[in-house]
Length: 523
Image (cartoon, rainbow, N blue to C red; front, side):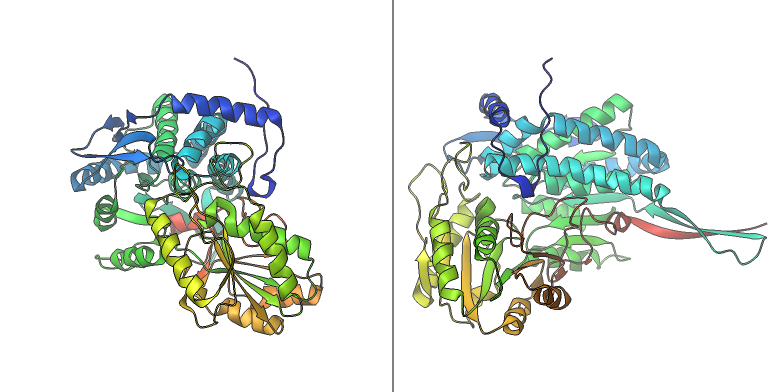
């Protein structure tokens, strides 16, 4: 077997010119195209199983491409998966944490080994450019490694406490909850399925994963890796399960009484519905929900405009604006406003939109017909109330292709300043000073990410002190508001962006999958 070169891929380094990377991706893409149209099963209690109904997945890159047929898991399938997870829980909980860590490290290694094949599926399934797709796959592996590191660094989260006397010994022990549901989004189908799944498993919970209906194939590849590793190690059936399907599948999972905890990534509306549902049983259940953002970049009179323009373009139009961290608002000091907008328009018009499987394309299609329709409605509204400086057009192609859009002169009271669109649309406004910029940036129900461009240290410090967001950046060329990576930037929001205020991949995240038990022994 030929040994391949290893690549260090993160969202901050999405610009590799290495021809071998692209050769590997092209080879994987050819392989994946030969696998399209197959029927894929769910994974329940150690077996790949079918449901009574199925659904078809077509590619947003070319809507005539039938990627595969997937199972429409119903309430019975969810019940079987939860029952299997519940039955497997005692043995998995009793497995030494060191053994769980070793198994999950093997899972992470296999994800990295299959990086290019998984990324090729991701590109065709979601519309990511090839480097974004490679980042999505590798981020899943890095999340899992970060959580394994956290278990080791904290010695399994067993902490000696102060004793009352020599006859007493006290300690704090974090223990798993039981069956954990992971409901993953379409936009990061590997990272935001693999990360929470790895966190739940390494802490001793058993898992039922429910992928997004719009992106089921990439998480199925994750399920295959976990199933293989666990079967090879003799892990009891039921520790990990995956049920595919749509809203009814997710609802059945959330409402199941034996689900002890939930991780959800998606819209504020659905996240809050899950949060409320989780509190209606005989006792409250933990819900780790990441629910989007309306993320702002601030450009002060002391900004480096080269950095600001590049950072905004990358964050506004990367993955077609379909990131919860995408930059959708920019507040620019009025002295620089006209110049900044002109340069932003020029940079936006230089973005190459097209088939994201091509190495020379940076922006692919929107991922769904729903987003395509939302774009049309949004630009019609914006054109009526503001100045579409560029974009606003549907692009003739085989899939859901649209032009990246810059809007200026939109009234401050327009609803879109506060509404998450999840589209490649960025609105720009002049402000008198940093105080006004911060006030407007904070005047939204969300608080996920934000960025500032200023060469003045005092302004940067004021930004960090005042901004109401969980992930913040200063002078970042690789992304004004996007690009967090496990082990470097914890990713989590404030206000309506999160139910916990603790970021995934960070020092305070993994503990949420466990509950504390205080143990005292008197001798």
